[in-house]
Image (cartoon, rainbow, N blue to C red):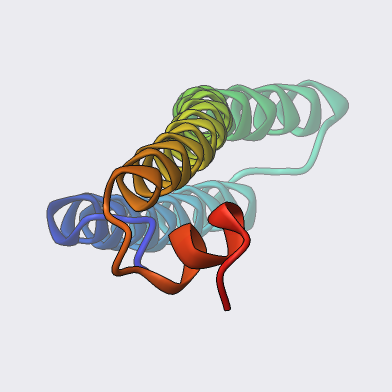
Amino acid sequence: MSVIRPERLSEIDQAAAAATAAAAEVEGEIREFVRRDVSVFRRTPADGANDIAASDNINSLIQRVSGASIMEIERVITELTSVRDMLRSEGERVQREIAGYASLSQAAMTSMKIIADSLAQWNPQTPHARRGNGRQ
């Protein structure tokens, strides 16, 4: 029995593809940023102010990029939690349905036995009725 519906699989595949694309985009942005900053350092004399500004820019870029990734991860975690809760509630519902069916089945079997015994007493041709009347 498949737990994840096909349309859910395509949503998960799309989310994975989007995450991969976002990671590639982040890597490209970081490479470009580093290239620009390194080329600036090569052209200008090195001083402490440029180093601090460059590291602040890199930190800012990494925080922006990682912020989007973290939000996406949190969204996926929230969605998975809701799926887990739904699966738990459905499992409990199925267990209740099975218990109800078993109870109903047992009651039906008991009723059929009572009906069969009652019919056997009225019909003297049945083996059960003969034993009950003392004939064998």
